[in-house]
Image 1: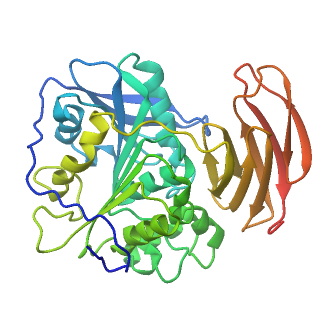
Image 2 (image 1 turned 90 degrees about the vertical axis):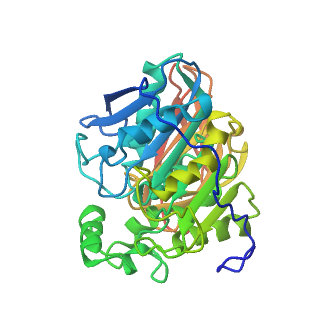
Image 3 (image 1 turned 90 degrees about the horizontal axis):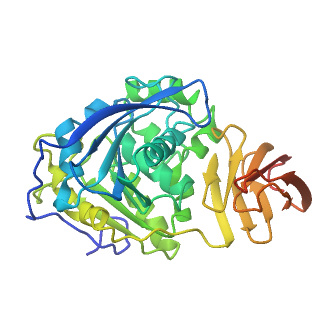
Length: 391
């Protein structure tokens, strides 16, 4: 089947399939946890897990851009927590500045770390209920944008990433960015939370454009759901992601498009009540609860895009505070050699190498310069520097 973007994708429609029931015995509770990068911030999330089970896959469910965790109702969390008998440990993360979480929203900037911090908290505090090798995320609208940001910035953390009508470019590309089609009210909060317009803050919008770094997600599986007539977030926000993945030679994705001939439809809503998007759970949840997508790790050597920051199982790179930088990093993790070439700069960078020898000085070469630092007891070592644009 050929879609409007001129490339052939697997078009998957949810027709029929088993009804996903709600189990009243599911535990639902609120948790509080600390930000891993902003220590003064106390953050909130709502969790749901079935009455029995162990080593459950962890599924993060993300609210919309201006919403909070409660916009995804408890019945939806319970339904996902008991899906297909096996179930999952569900986390409805409440990003900073929403609901009960401290801080201020920054539209896919540092707030994406809030998601990973919630996962770490749950893995540490809910053993042996959770499986650290099965981490998944699904998001709706702005939450779909969060999910794609996770794929770009934490590429080998998530076994599956599911985006419902997600925003892949908040405004960096003047032709396709969401800012150009957003309402005046939506544009106003983008300016407030990002710090200005795309023309005024191009690097800030570039760092938040997950489409520019989505090719980092070369393992796992990416689900994209969108309705052709979506008047809030245009289909092109998902379509361009699918095009880029295909053009990069990646096949670990599925784009599902509905229109007025389909039932159910992926119309713009949270997965509550009788929303059509609930039908899509028959597509992506079996892979999650069945643990069908294995964990993976980025190659030992290669190239990644850094949209503000990237954190992998091998290393991490932050550009400044992570909100206004973009770069390409070419690396050989085994040799501890890295080349950081910014498209926005000059930038201060922080590089963290993992799996070094604990408590031993480690040499790291960045852009031809040798750095030496002492690894901590976990074998993690960090170095810092500055690089000019186009080095």
